[in-house]
Each structure stands twice: as C-alpha cells, then as structure tokens.
Length: 316
Image (cartoon, helix red, strand yellow):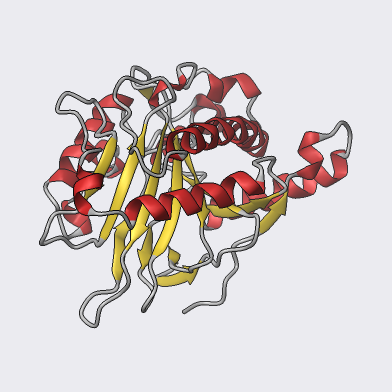
C-alpha cells in the first residue's frame, strides 16, 4: 500500500468574503490533486455533521433489515435509472447492496417504511449534497481558469443528479472486493464514508487508501470533466476493498451533466492552446446508457467495460 498523498482542504474561506490568499492556496492544492490523482477531501463544507451521521445510521438500519422488506423497494420496471433497492446478482464480482435516489419529488423514488425517518433524511442529504456540489463546481471552474457559467451551461437541469446509499458486506477468505476498479461517469462525485476504510484510488499501478476523516467528504473527478478538460483533470480508477469482519456504509452523490448536452473538449483546452481534441463529441445520456448496459452484463474485466475511451480520437 502506497503512502497516502490525497490532500484534505478546508473550504471555510469559500463561505466568506475576502480571504483571497487562502482561497488561492486551496485552489492550487485542488488543481494539483485533480491533475495527479483525481481525488481530494474537503472539510468545513457546510453539510451538517449531525445529518451525515444520521444518514449513515438510517442507511445501516435499512440494509440490515430482512430481505423481503428491502425487496419491497425494488426499482419500477420503467424507471430511467433503477431508483430503489438493488443487490448485485449471484455470482458477481462485487459484493454490495445499494439504494439509488433521484432528486426529491421524482415519481421513481422508492423509500422503505422502516426506518420511518429514512425518506426525510435522504431527501435532506440530497439537498445538502446539491448545495455543496454547486460550491465545488465553482471552485473547480476557478481551478481550470473558466468563468463560472461555463460548467453551469452543461448542467442547467439538475434532474440528472442521483444519490446512492451503499452497503458493503464483510470480506470473506476468498473475496475482498466490494466495488471493482472503475471510473465514474459524472462531472464529479461526492462521497460520504463511515469510519470503516476501504476506498482506494490507483496511482502509477499502486492503490492508495483514502482514509476516512471525521467530518470530511471525498470528491473525485468523473469522466465528463476529464473529457471537457481534454484530459487536464483525471477521472481516476478507484475501488472499494471490503474490511474483515465489518460491514461498510457510504453514500455517493453523482453531480452529473444534463443528459441532452453534447460533450466534447472545451476550446479553452484545445483551440485556444493549440491542442487537438482527444475525444469526439457525444451525447451525455448516450454514454450513461452505454455504461448502464455494460454494468448490467456484469463484466469482470476493465477492458470489456464501456469507458470514455469509446469516444477517443485515434492518434495520428
């Protein structure tokens, strides 16, 4: 295991007027992290700690409930995203259960009767992640030297965001992987971990543990932002290793782009710096669909999974 190098940044200055020197230092640190690792952690982010604690507790209670109770929350057959309770099929190369939530008010959301506070807590957590997501988006725009409106133009419709509550089973003698190595389809992803370690990012062939920190959220760059920046920011390969003798709970909030947007490298990272685009244009919802279909086939090899390399421009 490599020595952890993922930075943790304090976002306090971004909730105040002034503090330009402190903001610049944070922006420089995040920029370096996004170019090298695609991951960083944030503290003092504005998401109430009592809410994150309660969310982890009610999530754990739900996943520890009887199977028949969980299956009542199975996705509707016509849902565009399988909102509700899901479990990896057996056999599977991943060992986890999860519940997907679309934006509050969606007709496709399905919540359990128990714990009774589950829905209220999840909807509040979604709203808080949406707020901090907008803050992170503005910070990343500054990191990239972009006007705030540029990234916002790609996600003016927030209905494509979704939140996943994930439960990882304890490791067995034969299998320790909870989530196979993969990259996210999002613009970026915000992760809430419990106290049990397991999230790792790959760097130069080594796996770096992203250790849980009290009050911290993890942010990782997704495929969409890697394409928009023409590979300046990296969508990192990451995985979850299941702990011995303990289950693990987490949440992942996918700050996506609008599905009807065409995605391609921005001119700020191509024409304006005389660099050829590394990706051809594609419709974002087309990529989401291809990734979902790839996942549903339960592929076990990374080379068999659809990734943004599907849209890569061949080198001359």
